[in-house]
Image 1 (cartoon, helix red, strand yellow):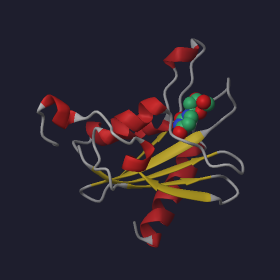
Image 2: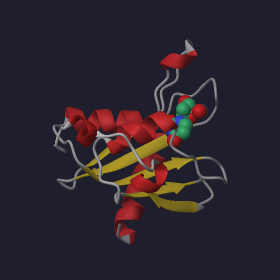
Image 3: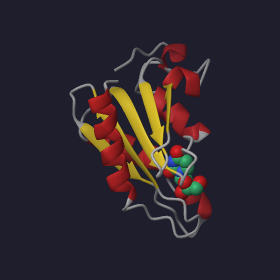
Amino acid sequence: MTQDDENELLAQARAVRENAYAPYSGYAVGAALRGATGMVYVGCNVENAAFPEGTCAEAGALAAMIAAGETRLTAVGVVGGDTRPAAPCGGCRQKLVEFGAGEVPVAIAALDGTIERTTLAELLPGAFGPSHLGVADR
Ligand code: THU
């Protein structure tokens, strides 16, 4: 992604991270997705007293994208961690791959500005996806 794109996604992820509901872990995360139309969708983690019911920032952003009628993402930004950038959990890697090609860039930033840059394919090599079920990308 371009530097401008990365800057915008990480700025939006950092902003929505402020709304994270993470009283149990104390670990707030924000995510911003660029959809194929150019729109940006954001989400934050939402924890729950029944711990397994919590949801990740990436899942929230994906839900916003789908709710808006978009099904393809072109870039991902995540902000979490003080000095060590967060890492999308395994479940979120699978969720992201459902809607993005392997080459989709992913930038993950810590609060101190440290940035790790990767792709969906690097995050989930050999992913099981829609094509395994004979379903074309939407
Ligand atoms: N979390 C996310 O929302 N996204 C990530 O990329 C890593 C982890 C959340 C889940 C949980 O609310 C908290 O961070 C600690 O695991």
